[in-house]
Length: 127
Length: 147
Ligand SMILES: Nc1ncnc2c1ncn2[C@@H]1O[C@H](COP(=O)(O)OP(=O)(O)O)[C@@H](O)[C@H]1O
Ligand SMILES: [Mg+2]
Image 1 (cartoon, rainbow over the protein chains, first blue to last red):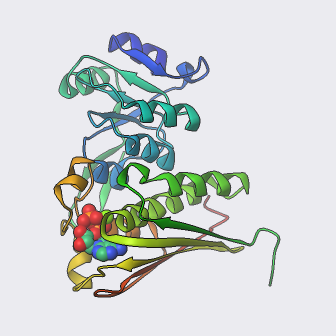
Image 2 (image 1 turned 90 degrees about the vertical axis):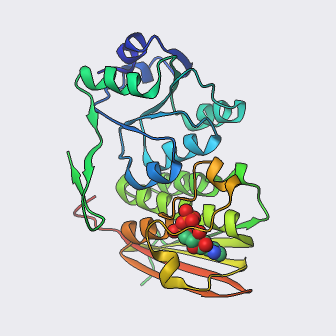
């Protein structure tokens, strides 16, 4: 699903993003407020859904080649996060929907988890 | 054997506040991408540096990160001056953390950092002395066939 379509579906505000980036095709996503979890388990190309608005989310997105960040339940990214996202080229969206609703809407449109589940012994099932 | 792709970089972190966490990782990632290092390798390096950087900012007073790009591998070393780690085995256990509330508020302190560094590294080494500081080394092989 194109980022532009995701913006429509989530009634989202595009805070940072270029016209080119609206054409990015999103296939997978990861949702978490815990940045430690994002660093462990998010995968490149996924969309990050989070309520944490600090610059570290944006920095992690760049480190992991995450396609973009959706801030849910109306959370506003900190001004510094916006500045860094512009500099690093990370699209930022903001939706009023709560995290569950945001994820559910995306899943309903065929976007799946960037990994399926965490298995015993630190392994995980890739999609 | 020396090749043109070989180079060394040093970044020091001196009493940085948490708001800077991840900046060193981002800067080094940019440099490595400019050097044409494969994306998948750079991603692993970026995660390892992110984790050591957050640890230096969280638990040490000052520290530096050194990275060495060799033809077949990238070596990352993080050395800090600080409280050190009393029980290295315990610190490496998933979920073990001494992070304070401030760190947790920022979304860190899940006790997964060292385990994550290990997961993303081909070689992982950690030494620490209480009251002196901590040394972490990670080697990531550049597998030209895979990446
Ligand atoms: N550079 C360091 N200096 C002192 N203690 C450290 C350092 N790095 C890690 N530790 C200790 O090891 C624990 C586990 O670290 P880590 O696996 O990165 O998880 P977290 O940072 O989320 O606690 C930390 O909570 C801390 O007690
Ligand atoms: Mg840590």
